[in-house]
Figure 1: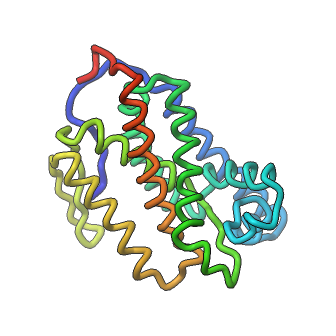
Figure 2 (figure 1 turned 180 degrees about the vertical axis):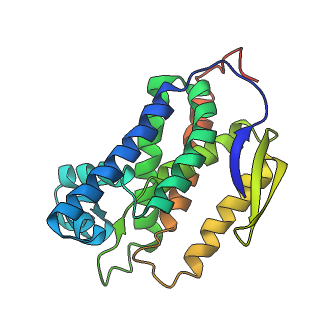
Length: 228
């Protein structure tokens, strides 16, 4: 299922979600150009610039934070980037409306690092070789967790594509789509044949972080009256 719209109208303008989306696109474009001009593969570039969770215990904290920040804005392929920014913009806009611009930006970064910590906690003990965190999936998982907590009955317009030819539009409750997505990430990691690349435990960590943070924020933040 590919989500493309939340049922219900709102006049809110999600500036941060828009600029984060642009930042992800620009970061990926920069890496492509850098790799092309240097005659390098994307994996070779990422070895220099993204977080290796297996090196966390042996490098300075400042280096871990910088690498972790870069990891949140980089992607391994155009498909990886496209799928992430679609889900991010659909769900992130509503979370930004709930939290406000600056709190949403802080939330995005926190759940991104929550994804890093999740992979380190669940799979970091298996560090026979480097495990690179590439992509905003952990942060997006956190946004999905927050959306599930805040709007479990919202309706999500999605498209189901069969064999890349036949497409059907469906209108499903948010909790159906989001639980489906969460368990998909879990089983992808359990069955992964390339755990060094498919770091889906980072998705799980981001999702749990998003749920926990939005639960805490709900005690202090009043949702906007215009929200539907």
